[in-house]
Image (cartoon, rainbow, N blue to C red; front, side, top):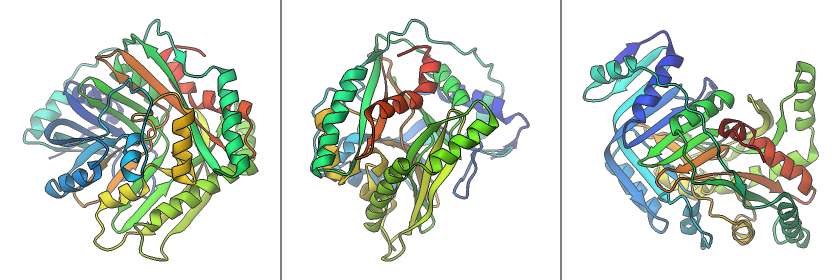
Length: 422
């Protein structure tokens, strides 16, 4: 059923608060970052009609079967440890968040927002519209007294960085993504408020709020992992980050410097090569191409270097297989991919969980779109455990101090929202 409303930002906020009253919900927001691949401005799914919960081992096969059985709208998340299914890998670190490796659900109620038009797919569409529209917003509830801890001190990070770089110098790997966790124990937060603040401070094209009972993904991701549009696959890896300037002239100078930074270009092109290699597993031979290399895109907090790689999907290959063939995404792993993941398991100190995974949807026309879970807060309300991670690309020319500072830049919006300092 179709509805129209003038104040879309207000309606979206009401819809988020309404969705969060359900045990399971998903809120995906493009924040008006329209591009040629966008299907909607926002997608809000609430209530479970049917669901899939799976652990690494046979999860993608189960997802493929689930998708064949449920051909309408689906939404869900993929955890990083699905790498243990796609490759001969394992995970040794403690998991303090306890998300499933894979979760996907068919919603009872779906709200699709495009411009000022709202489509509601539900047995009670008029009632749902009324419930959302008549909802009184509760005020933002800010966190208080969170004691943020780090898995690595700055010195420990630099020492570990240097040890990893020795592997690059020996030729074991060429590039890797080394991630560190910041966490809060006994954390009490209001997830909807935290996400609303994060999405206001850092308005990104792949923002998502995902509630899985008492576990939450509060995501301000700027990165697309993989999308399918008709017979076309699209991946848009990010490598290259720079701060925003305080004036227009300074901001433009920073953008130009990022575009011409040889170290950032080196990181980006290595990831592009990995994505190209991953896409060949699903592509019609000869169709993999780089549509844009070293594109500079600006967001409220940072400038990013983003490339776009596409291919034509093999006839008859299920979309889930294309996702499996590219997971985990090259921007969060390294090259060679398996060797880099093995080494990061050795040097990192926490299990990544949903970080470095993906949140997204399948649509009735058999398209899909999944982000990369970065710039995100993960929260287990039952355990009162809050976590966020940031990654740094290590190449031959990378400098530990610079990469640590870039980690803090990536975490800037999260630190502001949580009202904590490092």
